[in-house]
Image 1: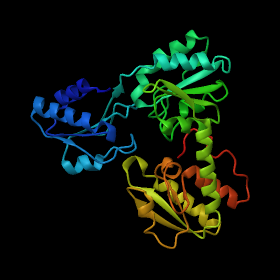
Image 2 (image 1 turned 135 degrees about the vertical axis):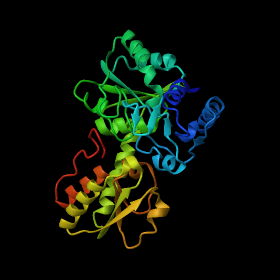
Image 3 (image 1 turned 180 degrees about the horizontal axis):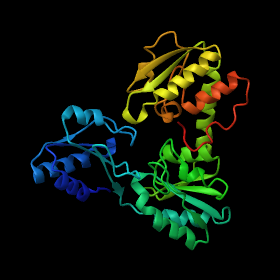
Image 4 (image 1 turned 90 degrees about the vertical axis):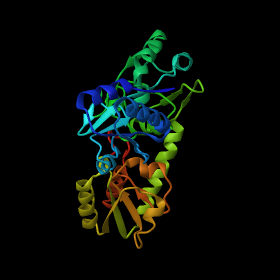
Length: 332
């Protein structure tokens, strides 16, 4: 069960005494967020707005919605980062209280003959489980190293596009163990490190290796690059969400591609979907600089590249080898 840190919310409201607040978070937490909003209104008698738009992470905070509503504070729930606040946004933890003991012991026992040194990684909702799972693997004789956080990332934490705690241990560990039921995060670890990666699912009490699935994503990414190679006109999409706005990167790519003989059109979008990009005619391929997972995880009729894919495309246009374009610590 997901547990929201309501105590911190109430403490912030008591200290700052806002006239109104807004709350946002991932779709799976909306029901819990509704309950939290009701509790705020009952306790403080101020409007508490529940923002129902999608919220994918700390890059997608919905601050524009809070501004339109006139909310003094925006509580972003369920996307724990190393910083407690960003402007008017206050980050609120939401942890899953499900345990990993059984599946961790099963995994540790089965993999003992294959690996000596491992690293544990997870997303926001299971960060509090890292110490207990570390002890379990150590009981089975593993050397467990926890990667240090950087920027917004806490120790052992990864986003879908940032992998500093994993990448810094490339030369020190044999495999990575991801805590949680998220192929989204665990496959990205495998892609960015090219090392064996396992996912511990505490709900079904099973573990699985995600390396093969990740290789499938890489093949899809490579295919998109080669499909874009013959594109005459390329659209570069700038994301309009606050944490996805990379205008400078878009202009850099535009300059480089034009120097290589490509025609480039700059496009700005909030939601980047197949249906929306098909409205842009006479464009053969797209590079979006908003979120790298848009290109790898979704269907697009025309080639849709992320920044690493776009840089790989430029290498091919220069007759340079493709290289390990996804084996980097940050996909932006």
